[in-house]
Image 1: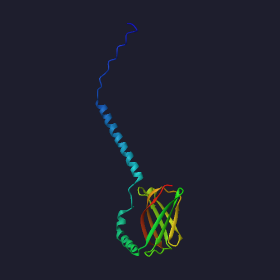
Image 2: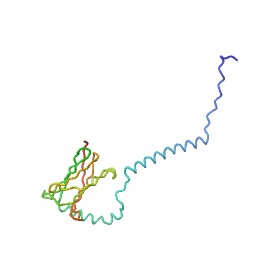
Image 3: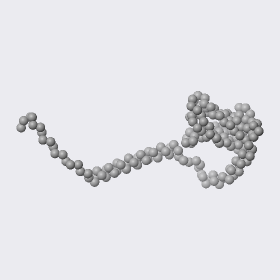
Image 4: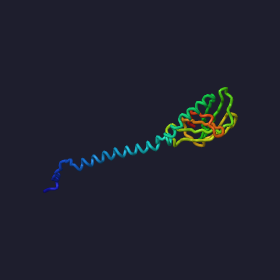
Amino acid sequence: MSCDTPAAPHPRRRFRLTGGMVAAMLVLFFGVIISVNATILTVALRTMPGVETRSAYEDSQHFNEAITRQHERDARGWKASANLARQGEGATLAVTLADRLGQPLSGFATTARLRHPATSARDHAIALSERQPGRYEAGFEHIEAGAWILELQARRGEDVVFVSRSRVTLPET
């Protein structure tokens, strides 16, 4: 035999699909599907858990009372106008309360809650202070730009005398 002669090729075995290979492919396929679904579900529940109230039953028992109180508030004709303005990383919320004749409403303990439309994790609650008659203001040190739901409450003593819910937008810096 000379050195110029190529070595004989090894004979190849034919590919053979076995039951163990099929089982492994099925396990891998469904394992990938289940892990992707679990990841997506976890991310979805962390960003929006879907809980609006702690006890829907208890809330439903007081629904008619709440509607009656809101009708009484609406009959007063009071109005609120709000302005959310960017200041550095934060923002200033200014709310003006007026009666149906446009006269300022003063002397209330006023609170505001800025609710993020997608998740309650980004909500901000703050007490407003009266700077001028009928004008209430508060500042946020850090708040993201975008659309917010403003829930405003004015109290006189323990009684909630005014409730307002509106959308406000905070522009980019």
